[in-house]
Image (tube, rainbow, N blue to C red; front, side, top):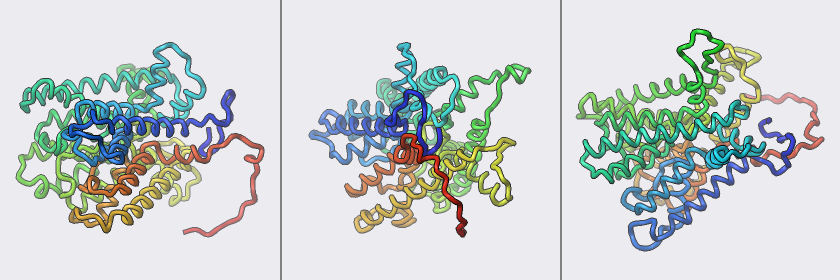
Length: 468
């Protein structure tokens, strides 16, 4: 399968387009969620929810973003909260992944179309042991979310004075939201009130990391027999897994150190040392598309806001529940730049040559991401600048840029502008959220992929142009 090219496989007609199916699936779920959230039984207050607010909330939940225009914990009824939780779970795993999983359970053989859709969803077009991977994805998700819900319920009930039923509801909700990197919270101040509780921050941080690292990495780690001395039987950590793990570690440290040092006497001022570390650990992980916060984001020092912007743009790892351009994409781009500067003919990482197709895909994802952010921010400046009354110390342009990058990276962090957006502004941000979730490359493939034609093999003469 070639990026931007046709799918020339037996049994696949010209209409068989996995990226299109992924996009349409998410659109269908968002539309269904919008309709249900508009119903009077979804809200606490009498009457129906504003349709634009309902659409924004459904898009944010399905695309596991966490940006909100109303307070989730107080505005929605138990039914509405359950709908949001279902949308988060579907969006986190991916609609096609879940539907195909149930087909596998029923013993139905995967069709070629279903296989291609699933492999595109997972971020890898050639996965061996697809059924095993699929079972691992769902079972691991449920296992980790159950474990996280149990720990959070225990802490909320015994150490934070909640009734068992309330603790269970909030434990389950925040566990699913954490693993799916959604950032939705039932607390009005997000997780600010639990910043000193290492069990809460540690559990949520672990869920964020495991959900964002990517199912392919988890699948690789689970299938390595570390106790075997024979390397041929032990298995190996593949290049993709090494890059995802190392880049995740570097990004975490790159966010943790500036946050801890820069906010020590600012947003962390007056707190015990243990609490400062506890809050910083979660806050350093959350820009990786999670959206939870343990310190007020709008009060961060400008330097830390800019680092957060970069982290949100890079995002999680391929095949994970988060957004952004993805960690491995960034590494490939950096390696390509190094190869260009060093006048190397090939892009090499850890003594492995990266195919040119992958380099071009990475470049396309990054360029499209920048374009979406630039156009989205420009549109918001047109619609929101005359109307905004709530700004942080960074000013209008930086605030809107922050919200735009947060939307594209499906992060959910906000400096407080999202609830004050105009109706048109909310639609713009919802569109950015959707584009960030389905992936810029998927959008390009959906538009540009056509059936194979003889004209596709024509090669035109070369001619040099001057760049740079």
